Image (cartoon, rainbow, N blue to C red; front, side, top):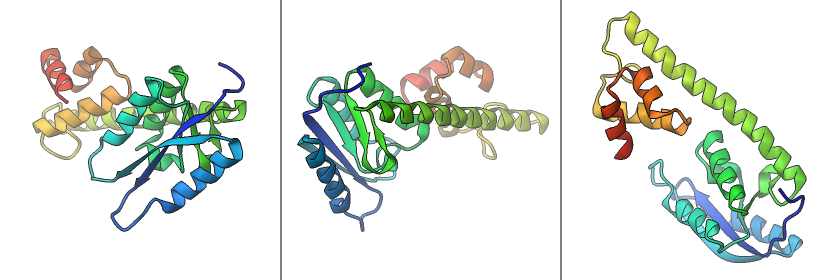
Length: 200
């Protein structure tokens, strides 16, 4: 990777988690940084929390950035951008691979600099720790189910409904676990895992 990147066109991503909040403070900080760095904010994307896990406006922004619309995406804080450390790392790495820088004003993460990329390497270590914790919780739940004679494939503490199976599969896919390995861990037919993963 280049030690420094030339940044001109920046997209600002703003997000609030409740209806009572606004994005004015987020935008003010992003604009202040852009002025200091000589960047031009060419797009502003605002997203309000809906309770859903997906962030459609963010996904469209990532697609536009990868298509060459922006040199960088700037957010106010990491928790405005991603649901988890793994989610943040995955999307930031995806952007970096496409030559798009990522900047978080409040978290000292600036992928246009060597220091910022070092911070992302530290983030990767935390993400791996988070993956390991999730993996341990899933395996512990399966062991618990077996010890108590309950059907395997159940989510912890509740019946193995289609929704709970889909949730388990989605979580494992987010960790990068392959479909055959998921079928093995959840003791489900591969065809069922494949069908759920395809329609998740």
